Length: 274
Image (cartoon, helix red, strand yellow):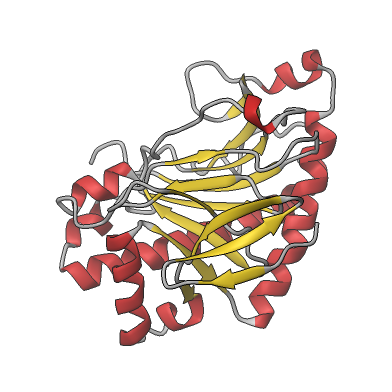
């Protein structure tokens, strides 16, 4: 879908179809610079997390190529899985846990970080288990790199302690199919904040909005190629005494018309004992 963009200081205007969208201008943080503990990039990360709580993370060419291939597989797997008959998908349902197959306004299938090496996966995820789990590991590395930077910048060792990689948690990679409506005005209200610590989100379509911290204005989020969208969750906001911001956001639909919309998310959540 073609669109054009003009910039202002805090937002830009993009035309999608016949509709003009106000789009958030979010910081792009280089993962390789965070890994190298670059002071300028680490400072930029902290400012982004304090101000709006949303930012992008970009990758070097080598990792970007791997992620693009993993995402291609993820979207294909999602399409095949979510178009199966309901009775087939319900075989992957898990009672009293966040992961497995869920159906409540949207459909999702989550793979627990704790169980990713032992969990029985449904087709077609089972046939691509190696790629799926390697991608989950990359996601975990991204969120933990950001987490370590926050811990170092704020001098809060308890941030790392609450997310020890050997501890049990509800961290998961999740694949989501979100329904679209013939009329964008009929899209359901999904306004929320994330309960965990850090969320990653990939989606190829215009599908997300955020509420700005100061003015409470709703802005669209660009599905920027070559990046992953990252946001702070409620737990991390609480651990930092409100210094890091858990933003209000929602899944939305900019224009009329049905289309497949698939999301790939990774949720870093604190250890149970924290």
